Picture 1 (cartoon, rainbow, N blue to C red):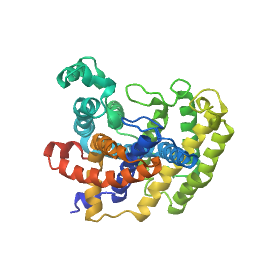
Picture 2 (cartoon, helix red, strand yellow):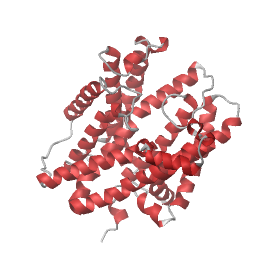
Picture 3 (cartoon, rainbow, N blue to C red):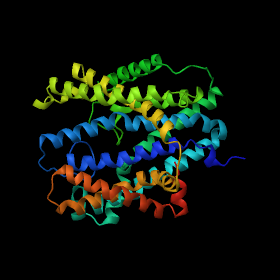
Length: 381
């Protein structure tokens, strides 16, 4: 009989490890670029090269990394429901997604706000018990999901999927070949849907910590993942086709991004037209973002399946700790960044230093955190 480890798709574990590590790097980049939302940010003077690096790195990564996580999550949702049934599936999702989200909302978030970033100078007005009581009674915890917004969104998607399955019965299976045509239809569907959503929810806006401006991509890729599992597409994406997708995203994709930024007037401060609305810049940016997101997702799946479908002891430990890193990253990154504040260096170099320090510290800390049975249970992803 095969063990669970022998039957796992190890390249998916390694791909999740890569995505979560990238999420950590993005939060570090926000710390030093000032672009984006994060607890602690420095605003040093930046040269054009540094600004360009952070813009491309953050914008390019944002285009695909969370969408790919929702795709992979959707891929395993249908089969998980098939094995467990409605009640066990929901219970499992509540434990694995709801519990760490609740932990973050009621413990980690208030700790960060009060002790680490002194949110709105609360220490001058409240003791921690007073602040915490106010935090709960005024429902501030509702938007206190931090990075765990992803787990909450995935929990909602999972409950909706399970409810639909409960009502309609077994998901029908239609054998379909993965093709370029499907890829193009997927890109068009996400582009149009995102454009419509951003007429009402522009970039840089959030509702209870949910950036709904990205959710058209997340929902569609989650559903695509479900459909892909039914047709076993992840194992059928050609390696050369995947490489072509990666090249498309990297080479012409980045050139196209920089072109529309320049021609669209972003360097002159005309950035609002990229964030949503009836502007060609918004349409062009949505198209670039979607092509990048879909092509990187398909390309990385194919590349990891070909080259990273294995694990040694180190990779196994790292991948098993990855979600714990995601859950507990914020306080560690804040403390480390505040410690490095004394270094008078360009932001790019501080980004490199903090990245080199933070990743091993986070994964080492995650190993100790997961020794606690409760934390081991709720950080198994």
